[in-house]
Amino acid sequence: MSYVASKETWDALLQEDYVNIGFVSAINTATPFKDDLKRVGMTSGKRRVYPVKVGYSQGNGARAEGSAMPQYGAGEYIDAYVSAKYNYSTLKITGQAEEFGTKAAFVDFAMQVLKDTKEGLRLFTGRQCWGDGQGILALANGALAQGATSATVDSAYGVAWGSLASNTTFLIKRNAVIQFGVDNSSAENNGGQGYTVTGVSATGFTFTPALQNAVADDTPVVTIKSGNLEINGMLMMGATSTFMTSVLGLSSDEYHGIDRSEYPEWDGNVYDVNGTLTLEDIRILRDLIYNRTDDDESNLLMASTAFSRVYEALLQPAQRFVPATKLEGGHTVLEHDGLRVSKDSRAPQRAFFLADTKTVQWAQTRDPHWLNDGSGILRAVPGQDAKEGLLKWYSELDCQEPRRMGIGYNITMS
Image (cartoon, rainbow, N blue to C red):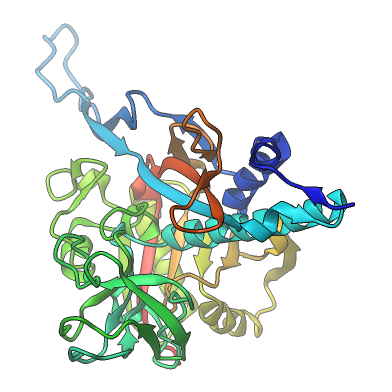
């Protein structure tokens, strides 16, 4: 006797606690910090506001006994505004996914569908944790003519050191729907429908349909309609005012609403390696942070697998590192000189990042949850024998002390 999984059956499954806990777990393992980051709520709607100290009290000095106290500079504060970004993940089932030979067959199928949705959310969140909010996957390497169906690209994350010359497409996946351009209102996006990636090579990709309008050299490749709407990750947390405008090419140097050129206390720390990596380069960046914090609380070095290979080779002669430690989600970390070292496949390839994980948190309205319009989670897809659900999450990464973060970039590496 066959088993029919109705809309109500699917809805009930999607609301089970263990299903939703699975999405939270996916986010925990998605971040390059390899820690379960603290979650804090918003203070007003989809925004979190808190005061940031940008100037320390200068009410200190030496005076003659009985002398009047002078005027002094009091501590200075300014509000940070953390605005939630709208991230979503879709689940779609066809009519065939409602009829099964047995209930067990339905459960097995449902778990696989949910696993795919969870994995998609994990990968998308993980990539954003490195970015600067623009959502740039790569830059067009050469102009594209109208009618083109393939593109050669370079510069993952929009920077030359974002990728190796031999692998510039590691952020672009088959079946992804993309546009050319960051500005969603003017991007070449096939009239809002986007272009579907049909194949990916080491330095380029093919897409359909054919390009409707010509695209200039160095035009960013972005997920459809996501330009300038993504989470602000490490490239923003560890940046300085000059780095944001001159290296990342951003039009503003604000982070969480605070102008870094006006308040340099809100800067991160950046170091242009501009050559082959040495252990001294890592020490230089650590000292930049130390000189602003007077401590070594920055406890994690994060980088790409390519960087990790070079870094481990530097450590081998000294043999001064702790063997790799296993972490949740299949990750491992090395430890050297009191600094944990982890690798991530989505990290900018020719760079490394230092972080104090205690200063980073998720600001969110609530955990990821299914859109429910009152009639249930799954809704019929017009014109198709299919139903779909929408998982949504209003959140933003928030670093409350960027002075404890650092970016070492422009490493010569092949």
